[in-house]
Amino acid sequence: MRILLLLSALLFLVLQVQAQHKAQEEAQDPALQDEAEAVMAAPENTPISRSSCRRSGATCRVGFCFGGELRLGSCAFLRPCCKELPGL
Image 1 (cartoon, one colour):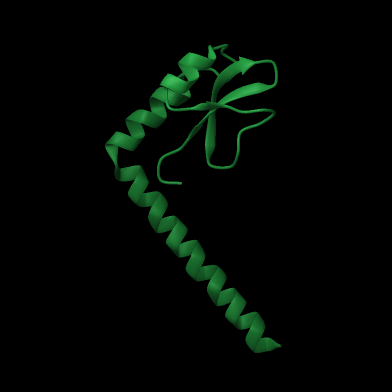
Image 2 (spheres, one colour):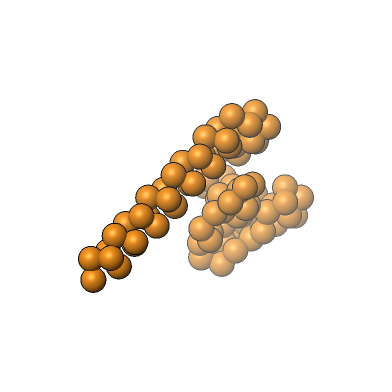
């Protein structure tokens, strides 16, 4: 039982270090920073058309955006425009 606990703790630490390393690499990439800043500049509740949403590479979802997606605006009532974040 102790060995199982030790192995799971070790696995957890390895995954944390990998995630931290990946986050540092993404923080150093200026192209990803520019895109993230541009996306974050627009308010979430900005109404946009479905065609504008599709042109930006996003999709109109029903209800909410999935994990790893950013809400760009609202296509309609309870229809967010969600764009997948690069590298996730």
